[in-house]
Image 1 (tube, rainbow, N blue to C red):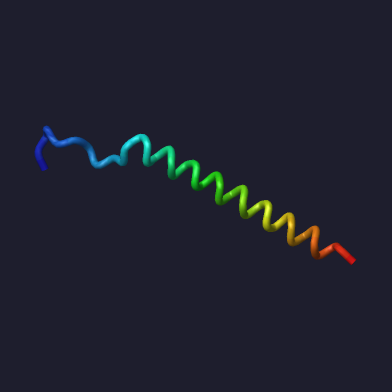
Image 2: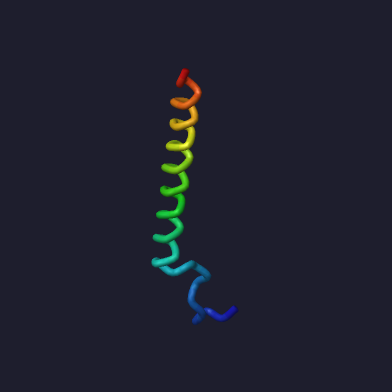
Length: 43
């Protein structure tokens, strides 16, 4: 590897997309768990 080569970091756009996917996955998980709890309490 040469000193002039750029670092092996992903571009800013990719980092933002990954963060957005992580947030979406968290929101989806919480909403599914909440829905299952509410449906489980339904008589």
